[in-house]
Picture 1 (cartoon, rainbow, N blue to C red):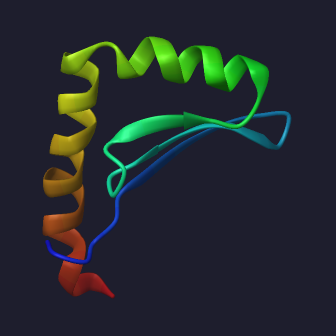
Picture 2 (spheres, rainbow, N blue to C red):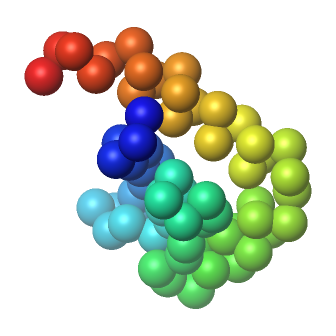
Length: 66
C-alpha cells in the first residue's frame, strides 16, 4: 500500500467542503462549515481510525483493477 492515497471528499452544491486524505491522516476543511466539521472529526480517534482502515479495505482489493 505504499504510495497509495485514499481520499474521501464531501460536496455541497458542487463545492468540496471537507476531505479526508490518507497521506495527511486527517480531515481538511475548505469552507467555514468544512473547517468546523474537520475540527470535530479530527478530535474523534474512532472516526480517524475508521477512515485509515478504509485505505486498506478499499485500496488493497482494487490495486490490480487499473
